[in-house]
Amino acid sequence: MRLHRSTTPRQCVNCGVSFFPLYSSLSMGRGYFCSRECGYADRRKRPGIPVEERFWSRVKKTESCWLWTGACTLQGTGMVGLGQDATGKQIKKRANRLSWEIHHGPIPEGRQVCHNCPGGDNPACVNPNHLFLGTHQDNMDDMHAKGRSVVGERHYNALFKDAEVIEMRRRYAAGGITYPQLAQEKGVKTSTIRDVIIRKTYKHLP
Image (cartoon, rainbow, N blue to C red; front, side):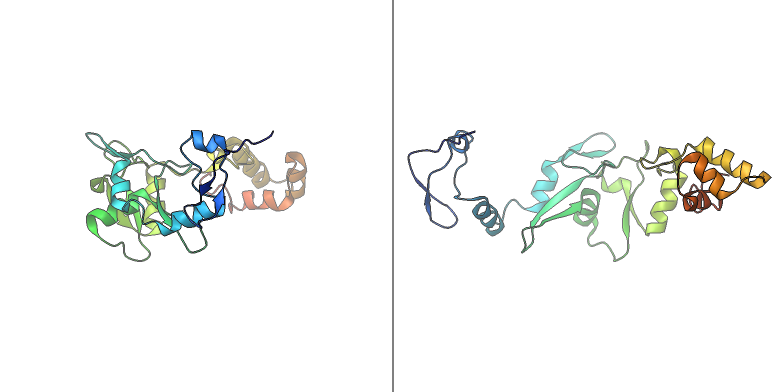
């Protein structure tokens, strides 16, 4: 498809070179840079909107949780863009960590910001009253205790149903079947079956 350019030249805001912007860019209020590289370079030079201002613009307060309405991870945890480093790579921080720093100050090294929402933990919540500091193990223990950990057949990469694992372990314990036989039956590697039987994987099951 042919790209149509304006017949009126513009001067690149970043490098000063004269160029002819695309009509499609002009129609969207753009067309200020001669190249994508110049656009990125100009963005890095600008101070941008203060982090706290961007944070509050993405927070929706309810009677209980303060919900993050911006970008989130697949698990629902909010993410805040902090600009770009010298190589142009985007720097990001979890919204709950930024909320803690805004309200309580720096987070000690090795500590994570965990949720303790009254109505059930909400990954998108940034209410400082629903957050607490803990170690990685504290966070894992809290997830398990609240049933939020994604284990077994709930995991997106799970090879077996929980019932299959229990049955395989029962059959192996009863004798008469080997790792290779189970592996051939299930269509997986012998090492995969071994890890299941010795509880290196699916540790939560009997």
